[in-house]
Image (cartoon, rainbow, N blue to C red; front, top):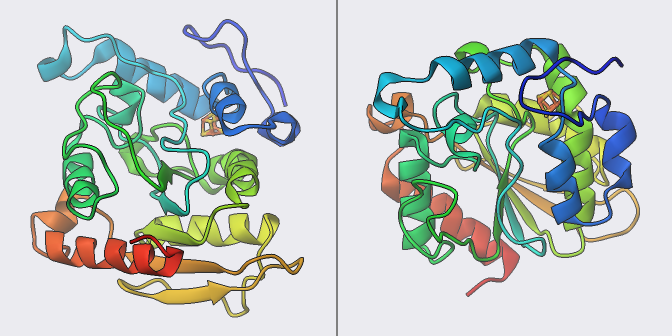
Amino acid sequence: MPDTPSRLIADPVGDPAAAAPNANRIAELDELITHCTACPRLVEWREEVARVKRAAFRDEEYWGRPVPGFGPADAEIAIVGLAPAAHGGNRTGRIFTGDRSGDVLFQALYDVGLASQPEARHIDDGLTLRHTRITAPVHCAPPANKPTPTERDTCRPWLVRELDLLRPTLHVVVVLGAFGWQALLPVLADAAWEVPKPRPKFGHNAHVELSSADGGSPLHLLGCYHVSQQNTFTGKLSPEMLCGVLEHAKELAGIH
Ligand code: SF4
């Protein structure tokens, strides 16, 4: 796969499938991801957004690169969305940070004791997560929040490797939204877990226990409506509903 010209990345990683298995630690993986230029349309878009900016952020320097996962390398719970937001993670360099969806998510994580503070404004704001890592099947902000199937598949090896590395401690994955759910199931099958056929359906509070393909620990998959404004402003997803899913995840992971 050819490297794509990027104005921001001098030493690009052009082939996630070749690069991801080489990462032996989460920190190494995160670093590699930030150099990825495998999807031409997304490189163009993330850098264009970073150049043009939104008026409210015109004095800020946008990140404009792939956004890696965030949280401890020995997390018991993973939270999986779909992709970073153009003026959120793509601006701040940390997933769900600096946008309305993140405001709702981090408040809930704080309320259930999984985050050190209720707000995530920028990458140096001191926020830390406990027992929890947030990541995504697509690491670059896509136009209209919609990655193409090819982009989703190209990015998959990063998340497969991340789950491999988290596996010794990971018990639960909370999936935010149906798109994330659909994108995650093949990743889990490529990692270490048996995904039933027909594939389990997404729903809020959906709960599926996946056995491991190699005799390891099972993984609990929990569905939760996405924390998008479309859901939170309309009341489809209330803070209580989100906290309820997170409390269930804690219980399944044995976190008290
Ligand atoms: S979406 Fe994933 S594979 Fe595509 S350029 Fe971004 S990090 Fe690389």
